[in-house]
Length: 204
Image (cartoon, rainbow, N blue to C red; front, side, top):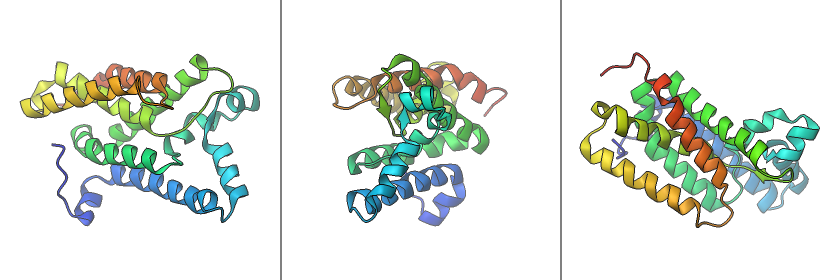
């Protein structure tokens, strides 16, 4: 279920939404590296960051409501994009096939936005965040729903894998530096709560 051995061309054909989400995240990261990290156009990089990062102050006092969505696609460090892109590459395809492309896209975006809304109201006014972690934890929340309530969709071996990965991911959120713990937890709970809607009238 989580082993990826397709060719690049077949991956694009089978999992187009995952491929598009990966492409957007990686391309924006590379753009930020070229303009900001390599300082080819630092002012442009600064503008990108201010536009896309989730700033509670900018949203509440500046009307930058698009920042409830754009942080999902913004990463500025290699370790951050590597971890999130790899997680999406591993966990996205199976879910895209299980619930369909449209529902999968809605699941990814909605859980990410809900996590960002939580950060808006539960974090200080000066809080700034970015990254797809909230949405990715939302996908993990959907998988936990399957493990608990819809086991017919997942093999026993994959159920164990999912449980271990979710447990380790949640625990590590509390011990890693510069982690938006609230975003992770709310994203996960949003996925768990919304999962029945994505599997409504869905049968094997």
